[in-house]
Length: 636
Image (cartoon, rainbow, N blue to C red; front, side):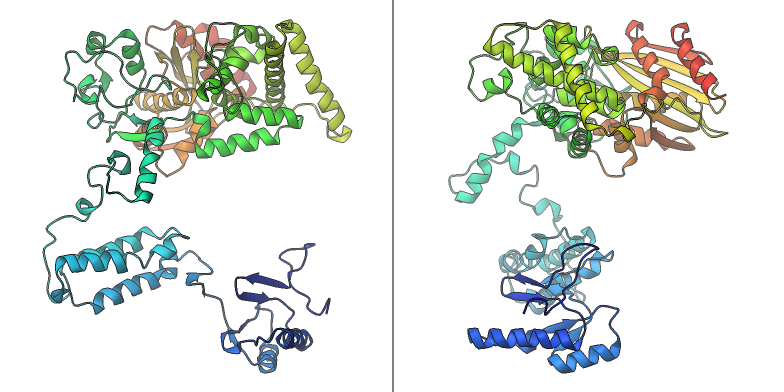
């Protein structure tokens, strides 16, 4: 019977599908011809004779494509003696196709709930009886659909409304007062599942869920908004991974004091004299490094993961790493390094394999991924041979943060050299553990570059070998608009950061520039977010109401432009940026490569010698005059 049924192909030059089996259901695909339909009947007849089972034609349906003529449909229906349908709306009780009108697709859930509630005589039931019916019957109706689909919020609100009215005995003819809000009656009215305590009467399933709570809590910290929900002495609210809680003894402030007591309400800054009075310098410095929102909302619990580990950034980094033109072993290593899955001494110590986590080569710091590849004194001599490396010398974040910055903002050539040198340094580190011998920095560097160049020579077709495309310089805004470029820099030696902003018009003339020094806020991406916020507020201060804002951090630009709330540690800064931008008559945020952001980067580096904030009107400091003059010449 091979070839008796043609089947269908989902796209060109792909295998054809003749049948699909799922549980006890079968889908058969064929051409809409009497010949192929007869072949299907012959196959089914053969199956019936061999198995003793018979086709249930009452449960069998036909589905025709739009290209099938009406006479052909009628002839096939007559031959097969089964009904035809226009579409398979439901399968196993769930919608088969979901279009834009999601509320209509799930309207049957609402109708089923309403029919149940309408059929019950709430006047004959006690409130306990109504509670049992709601929990056992009504709330079970949408559970099956919710296991597969995210239901529209409007539908959920309607279902809650039905349940509220039934609970309080409210109906069309007789209205009842709702004495307690529906939110107050939820299982955890003043917290969440992480705040509950173990119960000896809890089920095994509930106890199992509770056992995982402490693991989740280890990675959670409070993101400070108004400070009214976070306890100074008891909660995790400091940004450093190894320094989540205040270690200073509880002295002048009570044990239940809130973080809001440490904030000046007038200007939304930390009360520095109070911090220095009640905290050790180590704690005071950590607190002052936390950026505060200009528009404080409630404190939020968030996962303090490296910026390269949140969902969108992880996806972007994954694509970039695996698209690099590098040996597979180098790409594999780079991804493992970004994912913190290398067997560094710190990771081995966490798994109780080693007794200490100190670096064996420098014996000065704990060996995490960032130290083993970038910060170790042995490695800095190798990186110093790369002209671009000084721009990232002060990286204080994880290795994933560093890789994200380099891969996103630098040319592919720099990305390739960075990845290959990093792989070579890890190879040298492993070799040192077996034989205490260290290669000279120049030898390690030359071998890494030779490996990279050899791979390019052997794996790049001759016709595709082109000279690198010229870097895109700064571009002026359209006539009548201004452009603000912003960037951040990190000063590792002083544990500080710099923000740089420059505003120019459509002719390339400088309107104003700024360099500001701040405490290092804990990550590279937080510095970039603060630079973006300072650019918006600076534009408002200068009075440039129609302005493009441009930075070289693609991650921050994407976060600002998306409409969804941001739950990362820098999410409240993004909300500040959006709120401040609403004060402008017109604004737009764009991403640019580093070549088009050199002036802002130079200003950010210059902030290292600033006392606090330096502003220049219609000019820039002389030390970066060459950068702005070059931008001006290129646009003429």
